[in-house]
Image (cartoon, rainbow, N blue to C red; front, side, top):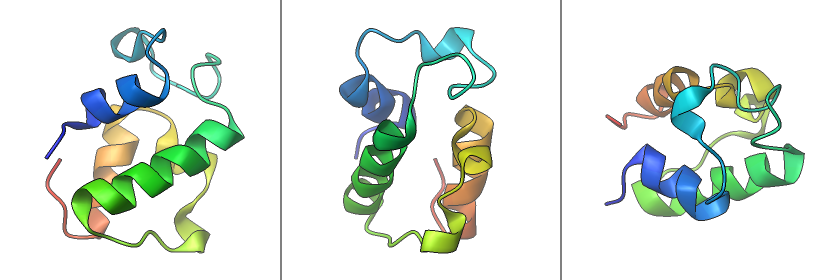
Length: 76
């Protein structure tokens, strides 16, 4: 199973996610990337993220994504 950092790097290899507190505001992820990330997380962790949870606040940074994953029983 890949780490969250590896999954993000696979979507946007040029982005320095470690240097950002807000991936969306810093232009590292856009709405299309967010949907791609949801699909990647679903496949990688064997979950199904509810549509109501697909909001920018849940994909703002590593901590926000990890908190979302914990809601689905994933320790990331």
